[in-house]
Image (cartoon, rainbow, N blue to C red; front, side):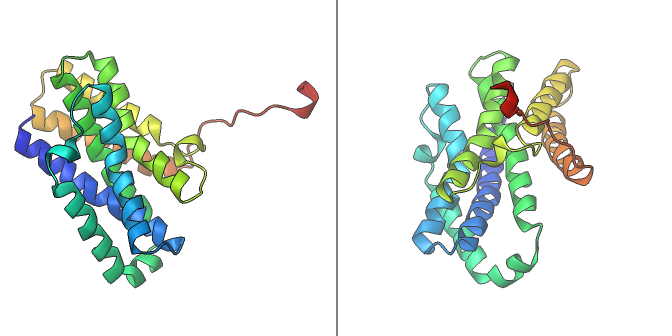
Length: 207
């Protein structure tokens, strides 16, 4: 992946994830610093975890623009908060965009480090989802990843599409686009048709 293009994807993904995190923090009436912190960990949590597992310097420590992008997201939410509150799907839209872009970056970066595709798919899922787990813990919500909502599986689907596209010899830009679009499509279809995984239940009589 071209380094400039990868940086653009990460910056756009950071902006989208930061807006989603700050939007939820504002609903909990966090102050500006608290909202910024939630937006920041939402945006960099997954990528930081990925880079540590790859034994690489976390991406935001090399380029400080990601901290500035989160600040821009904070101002955006503060200025347009009235409009965002009335848009019920705002959180879902920005969260899904960030998820898709970060899966692409996570898969591609892992492959660049010489790991096999199954590791890349796992890393893509980590890149896309860990930030949301930290976000939900900080705002005292049950992590979205652990509910019936299709979230991590959308990341896995994107990773599989990336692998298949590469196997078919498609252009790198097309491969990345198909990966990101597949994540978005799976998330949209899951919400529209109420797709979910079955809950793991234990009957009291079975104890």
